[in-house]
Amino acid sequence: MSEENNNLGDDIKKGAEEAAENVKESAKEFAEEAKEIIGSQDNKKVLAGILAIFLGWLGVHKFILGYQKEGFILLACGLLGFFTCGITSMLSSVVGIIEGIMYLTKSDEEFYQTYQEGSKPWF
Image 1 (tube, one colour):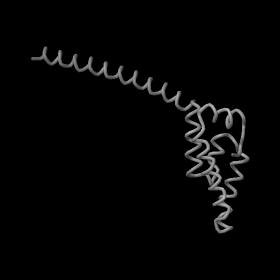
Image 2 (image 1 turned 180 degrees about the vertical axis):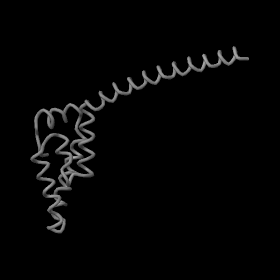
Image 3 (image 1 turned 30 degrees about the horizontal axis):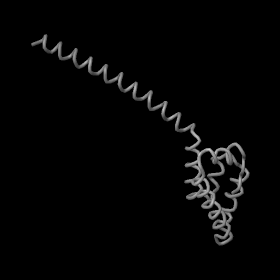
Image 4 (image 1 turned 90 degrees about the vertical axis):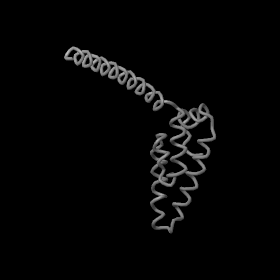
């Protein structure tokens, strides 16, 4: 009986080692795929487009694309809406929605050439 327990224990150890190796391989593959996704042009386009539509009045999409001055302009207009009965917030929100739609409708290459390489900050 103790020999059967030893064999069973060895089988469990082997199974655990194989499972650990599989987990390491899966984690390595996941990390490589995540690096590719984060570094891709498409990811920045989709992220900037969605943020422009939902948080465009804060200028978040401008900061994502690296346009700090324009981001601060939209942020200031958005926050000034508290003092202007929402007029400046609505204007910056409309700008965000328009830019978000423009970002999402462009091809990946066209988006990259226009907004990341060409540095076109507005429309």
